[in-house]
Amino acid sequence: VVLILDFGGQYTQLIARRIREANVFCEIVPYNISPEEIRKKEPKGIVLSGGPASVYVQNAPKCDKEIFELGYPVLGICYGAQLMTELLGGKVAPAPVKEYGKTEIVLNNTIPLFKGIERDTIVWMSHTDQIELPPPDFKVVASTDNCPIAAIANVEKKLYAVQFHPEVSHTHRGTEIIRNFLFEVCDCAADWTMDSLIEQTVKEIKAKVGKHKAVCALSGGVDSSVAAVLVDRAIHDQLVCIFVDTGLLRKNEGDMVIETFRKNYDMNIIRVDARDRFLSRLKGVTDPEEKRKIIGNVFIEVFKEEALKIGDVKFLVQGTLYPDVIESGNGVSSTIKSHHNVGGLPEDIGFELIEPLRMLFKDEVRQVGKELGIPEEILYRQPFPGPGLAVRILGEVTEEKLEILRQADSIVLREMKKFGWYNKVWQSFAILPGIKSVGVMGDERTYAYAIILRVVDSYDGMTADWTKLPYEILESISTSITNEVPGVNRVLYDITSKPPATIEWE
Ligand code: XMP
Image (tube, rainbow, N blue to C red; front, side):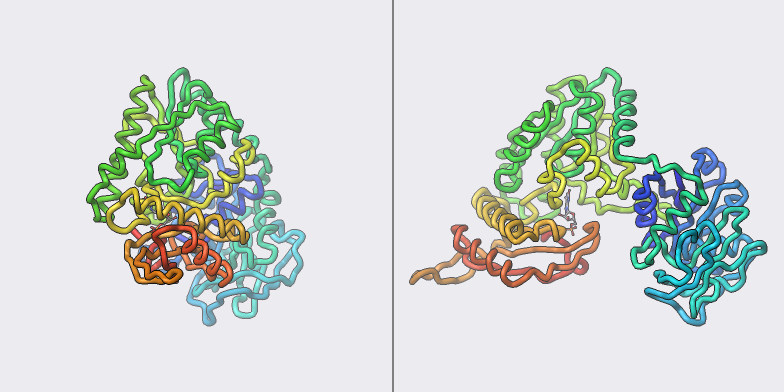
């Protein structure tokens, strides 16, 4: 394993992804991890991430200086480079000229870190401080016009510090620099592959579960699907997947998910029809938070009842991913908004957890899914919120409104796929705000619902941009919805980003 000490930099997860792309396993750990804990993990190398602070201010996040004495190779990036400098006796100061963006650099390619890289290349810079004086026994190994000390090294001790960001794709030879660190400096083996990961995880799950039973809430989303198939591979007969039909799903979604799984796998799947139950409990409820709470509670009730029927269940499979478990540089778990768990299950539901994906990023989950033979229509589905269409119908949820929204939504997806845009965007869906307006159809005056189209680009759902969808797609969606969905005479496009809006409307 390679350890990444997180100082709160915006690119920390990117460093991890780059290392894993080189088939080396890595973990992100808090910057203040003790040397003792580091030793326990027996890392091949350590990376110090970037971060927003200045090393010379009071309370700047600092790692234990002893880390440099443990004999492990260390690569400091940006803030990490400055911190290494400071802790080892060099000097860091505000840069007279701040650098931001692509920058020409001249580097010394006789050292292992820059092996095989041309002397003149382009790197990504983003800093306001810089190294003014390297620590004793370090030599300067790269410089730019405005940053004379852009990288330093103590080759003997395998300590390297770079002011630029090799993890960012704008650094032309960034991948090679990271690979050099892993393979030329740390002596890592490129043996972390999806194959070996699956094999290893299957072994672990078998050992953990023993002869007991496990349940899984299968939603048909990427994470729960991959988790279910993976655990099924380990303990087949002892796993029961529960698919709860809330009635708040998209058109034909329940059938699609169940059929896909039946066709491809011989798994125990129970489909629970709880549509009436959800709808009756939502009757008359208009407050968004109240709706979410009810849906969450009913989901847990239904799921628990089913699990009880199976009897003697000890484990619950959850599709938790790595970004949800990383402790950030501030020592707090990266906070996925609590409402994102609605439609999921609480931790204290009374089962022990199996989280086979908890060390993986989303793209890695998809790779695992691919290896496991999960069809692309599942692996590349857009995210869909747990409370489903209920948070896309403003105000009270009724069957009439659900039917209209299901139809509109399925048209949006159909058209997005038809134009080849479904997988280019983060999400594309319809909202029923419940407002009616006057229209004309033939010679008839109509008074019918408006549908709002929401299409956004996003990396992780935390922020999002509204998608500049070509007019012809907008037109096709609008025409199709007003032609095909009874009760709708108007389509609007939401041109708000997040923030200040959210992606969903409730
Ligand atoms: P917002 O609306 O907060 O949504 O910008 C961000 C992302 O999270 C999804 N979302 C949810 N996912 N349960 C989920 O599993 C939820 O309760 C939930 N609410 C929002 C939303 O679709 C978007 O991708």
